[in-house]
Length: 373
Length: 183
Image 1 (tube, rainbow over the protein chains, first blue to last red):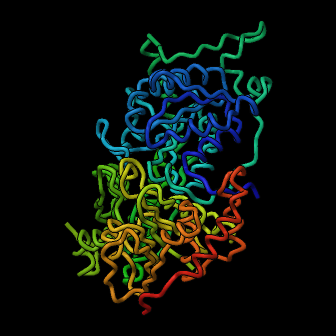
Image 2 (cartoon, rainbow over the protein chains, first blue to last red):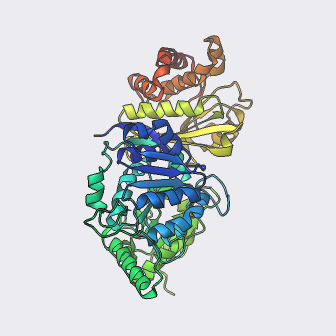
Image 3 (cartoon, rainbow over the protein chains, first blue to last red):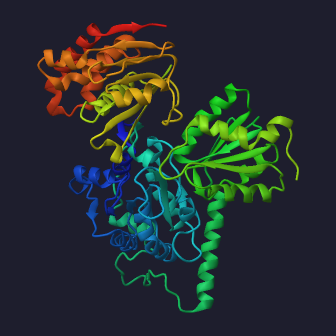
């Protein structure tokens, strides 16, 4: 068993980065994730593992440093919060277009604009539908505890390198600021030069030797026919993610009449809401997507055949609810899909969630059957 | 066992650090813990509060509107959190800083003269540990051995020389807590 500590989510991100053998972190401070770089600077990993930590002059600079460093086949990352991620969107699109692995952490705060520094989940669309321009996808992991903030750093890198694609940890201010018991991973050494060559030598700019072809890293392709082939290859990769790397947790869904779908902080609130609802005699379950892209589409489809309704609970005006509706539609089910959310940095309470469920599904609750249209 | 509590007072009273020591003591007792603070502008110059949950099982929501226990250290927090104590729950307060004492009749109420005692002990900084001691007396969910280990874990090594003083304050808190109302 690893070392057990009481730590903030943000601190754990930094600690996990050092321990998983990350080669470089480039970032720019912003509330509510400034503790990530604070912790890294205090830990001074350049003296121990040799990891580079650099405060760039802006988010735009940070993401482009990540772009450059990722091209060398090393494990590099950045973190920011909502407005900062918007600034990085162009760079993320270039990284996806150049097919480079990296880890980006978004500790979300309320928007739009400068918004608030309190937690939010309103960057769901930005994270799972692209954010930057062009047809690209990121692997998006949604931690719901400080332990998962630890675990998903290593997992994020693993998936990023598996697909040569940017991976994002989509957390929020609450998980960043909250302290919980966490079992830290053991130290993994950083990849040696030989290991980088062996793993990534066929695409990374590791210094050309006489015996191999040039590795060119670019997102530019002026020949449309070739660019379409690139896009087809990207799409194939995204379909493979959907086949192989969907992660979710289903809690008390087996006999559920209603399924709450929630991720991150709101899934924690909903776990309590399920307890409250069950105590009232309502058969409610919780489906917690762990990967937001790839989305647990199949799990929703299967549940759609037996449940009366889905309630998407998000700290936003309702974004993930659209993906749930799509899955229910594809299942040919008439299960009803509704949304409950709070915005502007407010976290819903478990009681509010149960009340919303009772109000929005009052027809089904009164008549005991699916409502038909 | 799940204990859901709120500790609320002014910034600088040691509310967040008391919560942290409590959470660390919980870890020493092999329990799950969550420490969720108010952060941002709320913290600056105004009230500070932290939700601490200690449980034998997986912890669900860090956001709660009802608590098993509320530790209340100023009037603003009393106005906000007296009503948030579950019926049959526990409210612990320091009368110094609370102008209107609690009026609920369906909860256990305890009073701790922590500000006064801290001054008598000659060290206002141990105020929060006196309150912590009183809490441990009325809600003995953690053993004192583990509290001592929790202190060791949560205080940087350079402050370890202050652990005996903190333990003394905890001891004092256990002695001076008074029942106001038991249900």
